Image 1 (cartoon, rainbow, N blue to C red):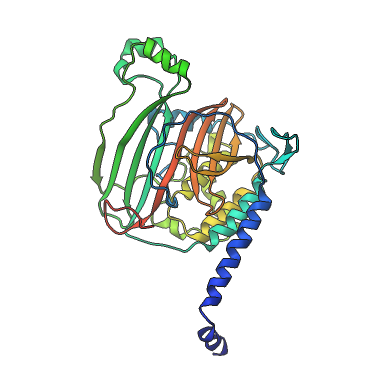
Image 2 (cartoon, rainbow, N blue to C red):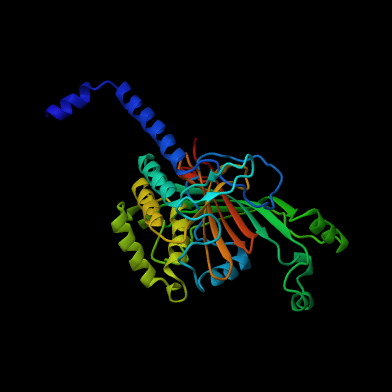
Length: 372
């Protein structure tokens, strides 16, 4: 009784001061986790475009859903993974050479950053709604020109002789209640870019073939898509009931890994990495999101690449994990909100797929976006 009475008498300003103090501590924690990072290698980008840069909150149903490219990359990803350090700075916060005045710079310590993200994620407010909305900007490498899809061309060449990238925006409204209608809007704001001026010149020399279908498409249906290709038992509704403690979530993920249809050909590190992306872009609770960051923080082989920009121009901290066959999976995480900004697949330094989460969250009406 005394505790409840004291709570009623507590001035409301105290809550605001507490939150302000938390935010200041969060900034200090993140500042300790990373300082000035090293520059990242050049990547193909598309021209700046208007975008909703609200907090991202969910994702598409599975990690590599990008047509035949997705299938190929998923197959490659499950072959083998190294559990030691990948390319780039050591996960322990190794000092790298400075490119300015000769003073050493430090990049983000992957483990410290993930633990700071866990603290941030737990304090985010829980939310709910009728639909789970995701807005993605996807950029992927083009392997064949649609206008040249003939048996003869396919037999003669595995891919284009120049580097071209196709970008488009995709939106989904997925009903949280079984049987209700959802919506998919794809092929929006289509753009084609090239890896270099030389690649664009080679495309022109080839007759400037059409590389993209730019017709927007919208479809409504009551079909519930797969939430995670590695975890058929996870659904849009039961994912909200996942454990909120690190140990409990780790045990649950271990069990899912043993039952995964792809686990026989994949290492646990690859499984956790891809499932982590699936969960970061699903409507999991703040507690589960926090626990997930802690589980990832304990995994070997995750390295920090320092500060990086996503395809929408937002800045975050890049974390990566590499396979033995030169595939690198990368996440870009917002250091202030602990939300996933983008996930990438890179092969030998060449980006194959980049998916930026422009916006995600709950909404109560089909076709409407979450309110800021």
